[in-house]
Image (cartoon, rainbow, N blue to C red):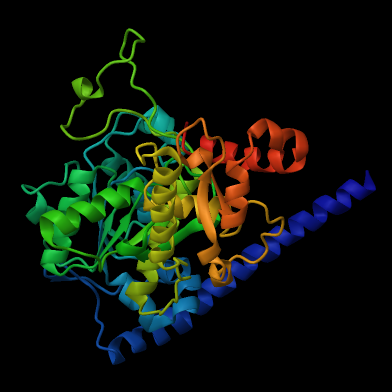
Length: 451
């Protein structure tokens, strides 16, 4: 009993000391930062405040509560840089799992003006990944939901919420006003391409999110130019459309994952429970109805990455993003061409080659790490992995099945010749460990590609 009293006393004492420290810091801020350093710095830097629709607003950093709320940011960026963030105007389009988290952290980072745009409503199934929505918010628009919650977090932020779909007719209403940054968190290809093209045409800074669904590895999320994004069907389609329809061949930063999607769109079932045509149920033409399985943490991290990128850009802080290690595509083209020639030589046709260069990249890099399937060591992954590229080729594991992602192994020329002369039953009987190792790797490819 005495021990319990001591513990409770310690907890109570800690709480009192914490409260006292907070009050002391608040008084210090109001005297030195709120009234002195901040206001003087703002005056000396000629930053009287941000401008919203042509109207000057008082600098919010002179407010005691706001300066306390953003203390950690001020300490991290410095006062002048945080002032730039607070004077900024950011547009976020698409307020689902990615966009809601991006907008939420931009708000908490002190961005002074936000425009939130989405035509959709909060659903029960979206609660696994939305930043702030609760069950009470189900059925209301995502834009208004965010605005409601945001006003209780940072009420001094100037927040506009528009319940609308971005298209050519709404472009002017959404993109006017000279935003400092536009965040594209849309998952529809047509709308995404139109928005990115408009931002490029208007000279607006834009950051785009690619596919966050069906992935689970947060360590593979990167920020790079659209031209460098790989293993993402959405960015591949957007890249093609931008180049074909608008002559845009890059120059747009994107957040994407190097991870191959682990699942595909689920089949669409109507009220009867039978599979039906998804387009028959579209509320908005061109928007998908079928469901992509989503682990809620990944779109949330996508959004956090977007917010961090934009906040540092607004503050003028130079952050060197980790480079995307893409080896010369000529290596993969060579392997692909060798496969075609080998198929024609052995089988008389290449019609059963079911992989393209990008899938060859996945097979060589992700499955076999640029080494022969017979090499036990895979520790050297990097440019050294291509030192023996002239000795490697892709061959079928099971010659009775097509040359697909889940049926191709990387071997040296001599090993390939030997492999072609043996049956799988022979390999299974004579080299059981090798057989199990290869089939395990190919099973992984089968699962990741949804075969």
